[in-house]
Image (cartoon, rainbow over the protein chains, first blue to last red):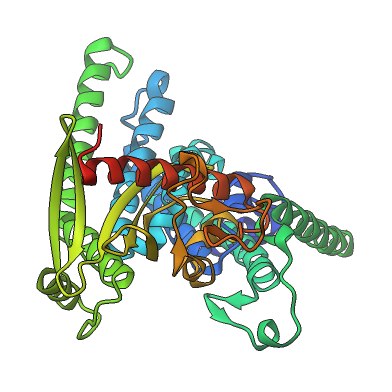
Length: 205
Length: 208
C-alpha cells in the first residue's frame, strides 16, 4: 500500500533523510554552508526544483517513453534549475555572485534525480509534490544545521550580523570556512542522527 | 500510439523541449529589465564607492545620478586597442579598470589613481568569485583601505611596482599585506594590478 502524505514527510525528513541516511547532495552541503544566507537560497532553489520536477514527472509518467525517461528527467530538472538561476540573479544579485556556480549544479544533485526516478515516476502528482517537499526539507535541515555552526565559528557572524564575541575574544576558525570544515560538521551530524535513529529503531523492536 | 516508436519519442522530446524552452524564455524575458538594472546599479555603486562620491540615497537612480553628475567615462585608443577609464571632474582623479584571473575565476575592479598616476587613492571590485572567507576577503574594507595612499614605484620592474605580500623591505611605500590563507588570490591580484597599471600608463602617455 502506498504511503500517506504524513508517512512520506516523516520518512523523507528523518528516517530516510537524503543527506545523512542516503548520503546524497553532499557536494552542495560542502560548498555553500559556510554562510547561512547562501545556504537558505540554495535550499529554496533545491526545494522548488524538487517539487516542480516531481510534479511534472508524475503528471507525465504515463506518457514518458521508458527508453528515454532519464533524458526527459534531466531536461525537466535542468529547465527548472535555469529558472531558479535567473530568478535568484534578478532578485538578489549579491547572493547570486556567491552561489551562482553552485545553483547550476542543482541539476546534478542526486536527490532530485533520485526522487524523480524512485518516486515521482511511479506515484500520483499530489504524493510526488509531498515527496519533493519532504526531501527538500530533509536536505535543508541538515544544510542549515551545518551552516549554523560553520558561519559563527568561521566568520563570527550569523546571516551577516556580527556576533558580540567576535569583537571581544573570538578568533575565527579558518578551517570552518573551507570545505574540510563542512566535512567535519557533516560527519558529526551524520553520526549524531544515525545514532538517534538506531536507538529509536531498537526501541521499536 | 506505441510509446516506444521513434515517431512518438521524437514528437515527445520536441513537445517537451518547446514547452520548457518557452517557459525559460518567458522567465528570462520577464527579468531582463531587472537584470540590466541590477548590473547597472552594481557598477554605479562600485564607481561611487571607489571615487568616494556623495550619493543621496541607496537607490539605483541615486547611484546613477552621482556617477553621471561627477564622473566622465572616457576612452583612450592606443596601438589599435581601446582602454576605457574614468575621470573625476572635481579633482581629476583617474579610475582604471583592471581584470585578471584569480584563484577560481575572473576578478574585475576599478582602481583610482591621483592625476599624476603616482598614488593609489582607492580600489574596489566589480566581480570576484574567490573562496568565501579567504580570497573573497579582498572585497573587505580592511584590505581595500590598505591601498589608500599607496605609492606606485614606477622605477621598479613592471611586476613589482605594487607589492602585495612579503617584500625585502616590509615598510616599503608600495607594499600592502597579503590576505592570510589566500596567497594565490593575493599573487594573482598583484600580477593583474601591475600588468594593467603598466599598460594603462603607457597608453595614457602614448608611449610605445
